[in-house]
Length: 484
Image 1 (cartoon, rainbow, N blue to C red):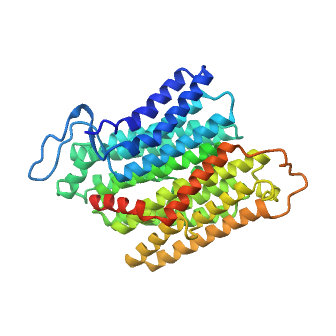
Image 2: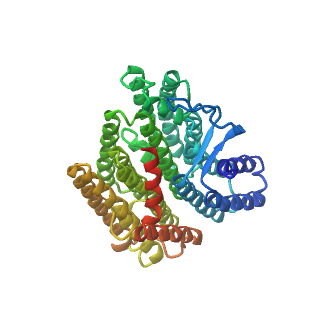
Image 3: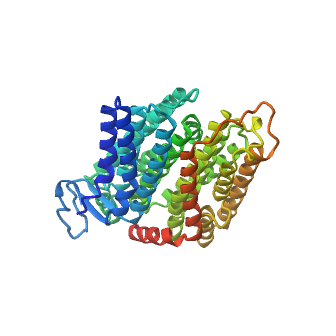
């Protein structure tokens, strides 16, 4: 066993608890949070691939049906977990760095929520226990609500309450679906459940099994922000601090892929499963970019575009081939970096102007050229312009759709990407290129260096993944081949 694997969850979790307990010591809290944040991306990079059995209990038996009984919670660590945990760890570090440099007096509860959310998504990605995953999904939902409620933006408490109310519907439905699986298989270990299903020990046509799919799928829609939850998901992004929204989006992406990969392992034998994923993903793509076109608040605009990009991820998973799933997971990794870059960049504009309405902005290119250039590249990456990372993953998705015999889906993906480009160019022109309004005061307001630094790091990753996609896609493809 690799003893470093559980540290990926334990370190941010313990940091959250210690910061909450000793937050009255401001200087100590800031130093401790900074040191722990640096460690978050380092631990997964330094860890070897493998399994960790909590309590040391390995699978007890391997009988003729190839069903293994796991008496303890198992963490599985492969290249996929490594790259995503390292990425969310890096983003957590950048967000905490921005927060610590922005405020002299930091909020212990806010830092607690940032670390708690990071621990939760890490556990969701690592665990091979579906109930364990649900527990951390609930913890993540509470952390997301807290991050939004703790922001200084108007109506943030109202938006957090709405998200929590919807969660009180989606989460119990997911738990009920997990209960049905437990009743049918006698296990909550994902490997055991999948083995029981694929070896014919479970009747996949039974109403109970189909109901478990419906319930867990509904919970997944809530977790990922796909329709009908697209408006509330974009809403919490707009009501969080910009750096907080960047991290919230990464939480959404990782919870989305964690749950859908579990569903894929269990329900992939059902043709309706892939149809459902493709349908809701296409719906998210269309609604996301359509609603973004109508926005004048650039925070809501980015929020809706982010929802549309989630549709591309689901599309790759739903097509069900090794190449398409690889493309979908690569798109997920790109969305984390690109959307974070945009949220932080637009947050820099809010910091400089105290304005979010694109109709009241203009002429910012002359005042903030660095931010404008990095935002331009980030927007082009989201739209899928070569040679940036977004182009590579969307090209793979188009090719995957064609190879599966769905040219109409390929055309739709291209049209949505073009519409995304139009939305961003329209917003970029309104903010940076049109004449500055006379009542807009930006001359004496500087963009924090921490934001410039964070955007620079993310921009390097966006360009690197665009020029060298094989560095990531080869490892992801090997992982996907192992679960098919």
